[in-house]
Amino acid sequence: MAKDKITAPEIQARKHVGPRIVVVTAYDATMASLLEAAGVDVLLVGDSLGMVVQGLATTLPVTLEEVCYHCRAVSRVARRAHVVGDLPFMSYQTSPERALDAAGRLVKEGGVEAVKLEGGVAMAEHVRRIVAVGIPVMGHVGLTPQSVHAMGGFRVQGKTDLAKERILADARALEAAGAYSMVVEGVPTELGQRITDAVSIPTIGIGAGPHCDGQVLVSYDLLGMYGDVRPKFVKRYAELGVAVVRATEAFAAEVRSGAFPTDAHSFGVSSPRAVRQSQGEPTGSSPIVVGDPASFPPASDDDA
Ligand code: KIV
Image (cartoon, rainbow, N blue to C red):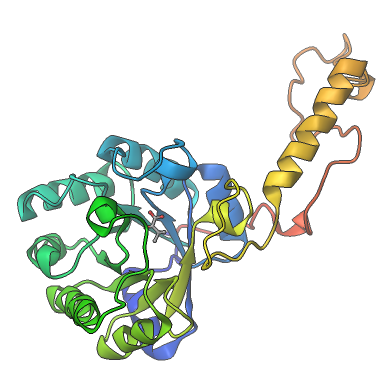
C-alpha cells in the first residue's frame, strides 16, 4: 500500500477532525487518475455504472462481475484515494454469508479497500459478518436506488415522522453493526443533520443537505456528461458533454475535409516504428481544453 493511501480508519476519524470527506464515483482508470489528480479522498465504484456507463434505466441489472471489472480498473491506478466497491442488487441481500462472499470477491478480485451496501436494520447482520473478517463497510440509507420499485421511483425519503424515525433507526443499526461510514441519500436537510448528529461515524451526503460529514456526486453528473437529467442535488462544475461533442465535431470536419492528418501526425520512412512518442504527442489544431491541465498526470510516489 502506498504510504499516503487514505484508509478506512482515516475516513472514520474525519468525523471528528475534518476536513469534510470528498467522494466521487469512478468506473475506469483514466477518470480515476483525473479525479485523483484533483485530490478526491474516496473513489466510489458505484453501481450507478449501470446507468451512466451501461445506459440502463436503473441499477438493478448490474452484476457483481461487472462491478468487479470496473473496481479492478480503478484500484489499479488509485495511489492515494481510498477505493470503495458497491455491492450490486441481489449480490448480498439474501444472506450474511452471501454478502460476505460478494464483499470478499470485490476485495480479492476488484482490489477495493472497502465495500458499500444499501439498507440499515435489515442489513445489520450482513454488515456485521463482513466487518468481522476485516472488510470495512460503508452503509447507504435514505433513498436507496436498489429499492426503486418499493419507493415508487427515485423519490426523496423521510418526509413523514414515521419515515424519519425508520431512517434514523437504519443509520443507528449500521453504526452498531460496525460500518465505518455511510452514504445518506435523498432526504430533507433537517433529517441529514439529525442523522449526522445521531451517529459517531461519518455521513456522506448526496441530496441530504450541507450538514453531512462529506459529500458524494456521480462523476458524470458533476462534470456535465450525463444527459439532460438534472436532479436538484446535482451541481454541474463543467459541461464536458458539450466539450466532447465540439471536439468530435472538429475531428469529423477535419477528416472529411482532409485537414487531418497532416505530416505532423504521419510517419516518415526514417522512423517507421515510432508509433507513439514517449515525451508527448505531436499536436495539430488547438485542442478544446477545459481549465488548466498542468496538474495531470499526478506526481508518482514510493510504495515503501
Ligand atoms: O452507485 C452510486 O454511485 C452510489 C452513489 C451515488 C452514492 O451509490
